[in-house]
Length: 492
Image (cartoon, rainbow, N blue to C red):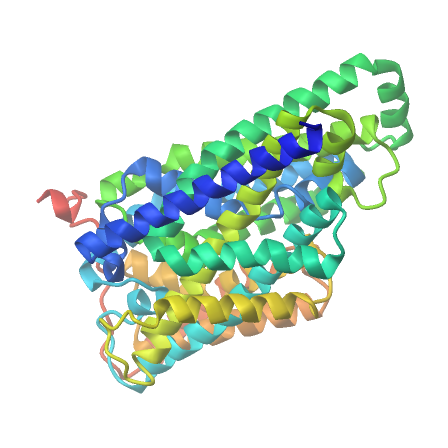
């Protein structure tokens, strides 16, 4: 048996395990019929943390992060470190409140959480506007994952771009249509362990290769430039503060505005169990992100002159490492991209079902007969979209994440913290958040300070002003998680 066959068999084994996890979830759905209520809201901290982090990882980690580390060096370690600051703030305040709000509102989508206890046309428009924003930007985000998958398969198996993209995306659309929300969580947990193994193998392999060829490695690193190993590069203090602050706020926006992530917090078994997942989520995300950036940096010293650094992970193993390890890396790359794509497609399908088909076209809420077909059609649309989107994996993913955070994170902050609001003020905050983000990025300031932070600030300000001039009944500032004594409601 030749090495290519062994590599392919290892990869296929991981694919079969993924489909097995999804089929197990489908059987569970058939037994307890709890799919319509986020799998019974029984996820423990490990399932919440691993599923949310794996879904949030995205194909950017194994393509964009490697490419940035390879091309620009240590400076791009600031990106995961900036994200860490935002994540620490987010987990300190929001996940347990999101879980409590979702339980109180019986919400399974962001729109249902935002419109809880609100009435009138403005509340209906919130559902429609949020659904449109999510479907639009999550579709482009998913398309960026297909582009990452195309780079992976075309590089590994020497396929043309069209065939590689179709083969990669078709397997993920297939299991997304089969398993629903529970299937997405089960697959995420399995893929998290594949990711941990693959990331460890990658770091060990490239470090060993650099040590055994240390003279050439040092020459190549020096040729990368004097700022390659500098964390702050040649940037000014102003630009560094703007970079760190902008992406820290983008992390908060990501945690609040990405339904494929937020639904994991909504499905936790309790607010306390949801909050306890923080160290699992942050530990996994930082380990994989920093590791892949460092891998790209070391790879620059091992394999200089790559035409497309975003393909560096698979190329390094193909050319230098044994068949079994290469198969593990292929499974790792697939798992990283697939978990995000799967989570997003399922989240978009939930949004369309609950917020458009039910509220606009009056389909019965409990009718789940169309869920698989809706997921399948959405998958096909995102595949077609990937053929026409301009830009690379990094630029498309960051733009989509930033715009969603700008439009939705502010209203979610207001709702989860119980700040004063009305239906009209929340609707205005959504529109002002996304509008200001577009103005900011169109003016060319997005590279200085991420537009998600601008959108969040504007949406909070507009809500504050609107509630001061409104004649509508104002919803009082009641924390949905804590009573006045600071004790969680569920503990009373």
